[in-house]
Length: 319
Ligand code: AKB
Image 1: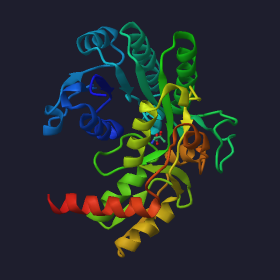
Image 2 (image 1 turned 90 degrees about the horizontal axis):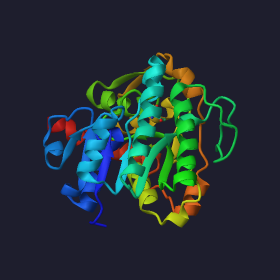
Image 3 (image 1 turned 90 degrees about the vertical axis):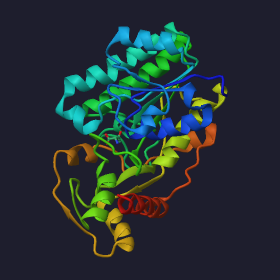
Image 4 (image 1 turned 180 degrees about the vertical axis):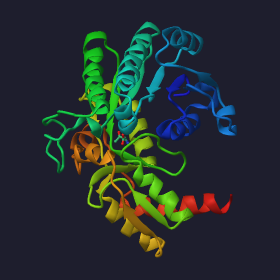
């Protein structure tokens, strides 16, 4: 495995930060090249190679690919649901043209394998809401969902047409304590922990009963690595796999947090993100991922809440 050179694009985001750490442990710091629009000032990003990379700049991409000759690429750069809704044209530009540029460079420079995340946002209001199957009516009504669905079709197309070995997961909402999410509809499920610990209160931008599928970050990283490392013949779905851990609503999560922080209070002030959340499923059937390449989540809702509170408590008390 140590022969591989790994490039992570969009490495400073919520998934990229944790994935960079895990990939460095597997391949060694010098075989993992992190990249993003800007390099944050912290020791973590100084400990391994870092490149400034704009996925809309083909020359910049060529330079980085030619310099490092990556064998595996994780392409994570994207505008998430709420941000893309504010800037629909920019959402399409970054999410789609960025994807084409990375796919094309990967073919030109002989990349062996690519991981690209899709999302539960591919589903829309006409999709069955409960235990949403892998294959069903998929009519997204957000720009983010439209780009993710189009991206999935192109993953399959590039695999069939050019033999590009792309693997993909439909991430649900992701919850972690190591880095903050940005611009998503499911982000309330991270913010709530920080506010509960700092201020003992949180105003949620979704209604109390909005059920959404979620996954704890260690499981998201595990799924990402497992699908990327799986033998090619195990990857039977070349668009993107359904993936899930557990589902909950803001009121259920608040109750779980109250079990640890009894004086925590939640209030609700739904905004435009409510409509996005309502267009998405409440729970996901990820049978194919479990059957084809052995996906299994380690954390349930209670395990995630306990781990988040323990780790964030330690972080805030050391500040
Ligand atoms: C978002 O809320 O936009 C993302 C997602 C579900 O893809 N977390």
